Length: 130
Length: 215
Image 1 (cartoon, one colour):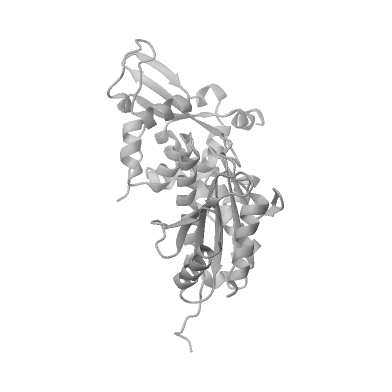
Image 2 (tube, chains in turn red, yellow; image 1 turned 135 degrees about the vertical axis):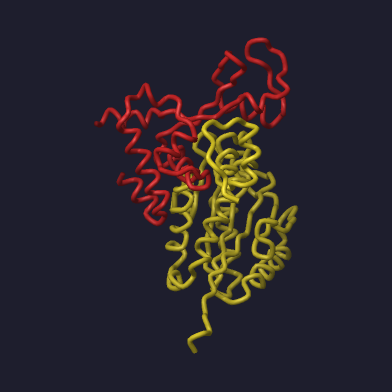
């Protein structure tokens, strides 16, 4: 909390959102924090606005207090495969993505790769401190 | 237009929403950056947002020196997730060092309060280009931040651009910056140490404050 107050002291709404998220994360078992959606972060911070939650997400995935890691998944029906940021960056840059199981090119891959967040190694310290 | 927060977000939705949510756009660029250009594109967007906040309230900064002004920018960038330091020892004490959290990209910034002395700006440019920056592929760009308290800031930036153009730098070129037309521009020259092109974004910060309503 000291770090958040120091870094975000001049940005009270972002600071309040970050504190609310950290409070929530600290109260949960680690195993429940491996798939955190944008919507879930909004509920933790008490907002439904993307513009309001994004600065908090940027701070909590950033260098100063990296409590959350961005994660990506390819979801095609029942098939779910985690993807690295490098794989997603390459697909986004080239416009080409191959199905991890069949090896065939996926034309509409952008609608099948989803982003979420997980508690980072640093973030796990939050729950063990309780 | 306010953008409602979705529960899940696909890459397609991300691309669609980036148009309306600058913070989401910068976040996506940074998270998925594989090139320095992608990193610096997001960084320039965020620097401009931090600069705008400073320009919105010049009265409270009227007595601030370079370090204090740069600290405001550092705080803003830290809040946006950057690994950023002030006065880090890189060939000397560089005013602003911004690193990507996962990649080895590094952007260096030198800040100067303009005092109607273009030689002082040249000193800042030389500090950045010949003392701090090595001009290597993971750090091919930097910035000169010019805090301007005089009226007509665009005239200061334009005069500085003219002086730099005539400075005899090797393979020198310059171009407008569409993000802050008239107040920012890019220069590029051959970096003496690396021999590679080195790009500097010159960023004029409008801090003139002289209200005439209470005279």
